[in-house]
Length: 316
Image: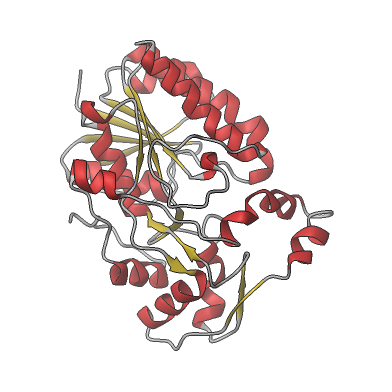
């Protein structure tokens, strides 16, 4: 087996993972539908459809690990998009022997009243959450049956470099906040919420893929202590040398009325609970067992405020 790592999905998490692995000296292949994107030293890019099991198997043949860092274009396509893609990853991992490492979210846990820790049941009942929970259940079943080696890394809402407004609630309001305008966020701006730097997701994915003792489990990416949405917006403003702005929540009727005519707003109603109550990720397990700590919060805020090239992953 070679030292090749195959990362499928060239968004912020896939990019962060590629940078981390290339920085460690590995042979890295970054796969996306177009195969295009900024040059990353030590990383080769190639085009492929993530649902094409034969192509995925061809690319993963002889690889150390196969990473699912795919990010669908919209919540509205999840029910049609994810099943064939997830099946293709399972089949490719089984055919090639590459360890399957999946980048995922916290949706599967559903509404919780305590900090989320690995091992909590995936008890969500909503559509998008059940899709992600089923993906891990299928991968774990294949792992326990000895057909593949698999692990999953979950992160909270993304911040840091390269993250766009479509995938980050903080980045969605960044430009307005830095312009000194009042901004509105999902849910309540005064509830504690966890935010994960995409570089820390990349470090966690790379570390788990290379540590067989971690396989067969869910891991939480290194994540800083929770902050309220109002605090995060203020922190990002200060990191850019600007004064904090007023942060308000959208009135509840916006999702209700807007969801009747705008599909993406209707989908956001499913996960509104994440922003109306404390939503806290505990990443102490990966710190304790793999020695991974989150990127210092001031650095996270600077990268989020800049929204530009931040090519060096934190190594602490």
